Image 1 (cartoon, rainbow, N blue to C red):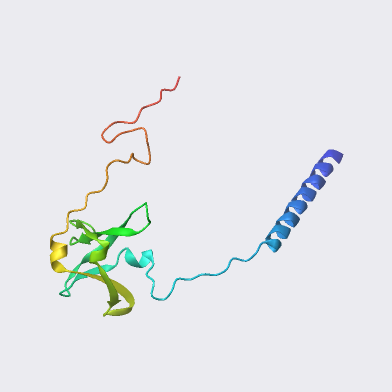
Image 2: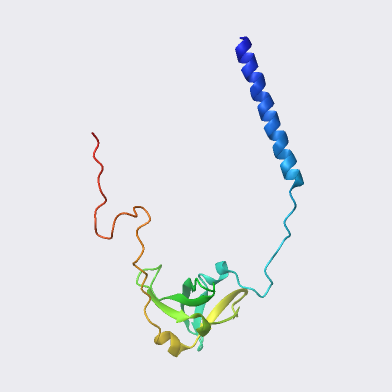
Amino acid sequence: MYNAASVLTVSFLTLALAVTASAQTTGTQTQRQAWAPPSTALETKQLVGMKVRSDQGKDIGEIDQLIVNPSDGKITHVVLGRGGVLGVGEQKVVLEWADLKMQPDPNDRNRWMAVANQSTIDSAPRYEARRDTAPAASPTTTPGSQPRQERKP
């Protein structure tokens, strides 16, 4: 009985010391300065899924992906999803970032849209995803191969 009481007392003291140390640490940390983007800035959550229209006002599709140059961190291209219903039958093409002009959506003042020249959209190359990366679930397998089965003794 004496041993159980001792273990319980030591456990409570250890917990009390940990809580006290935690409270002291958070009290001495400095507050981070707040930052918000300027009202004219577009966040990525506004870009992906953004409507794209031609310069003639025709709905073309929406931005599916942004392609970023790893050396300077700048957006170089966008993948545009055209046509289809709920992603079925959708055609993906690539436009240079500089070919898009951002402007407020005239139908919804809280949204933005992208406008591109119709001839640029018509001549845009088809997007093909990279195939040089291994599947995330099993990095040792290659496409079309079966994963190794481990035998149990």
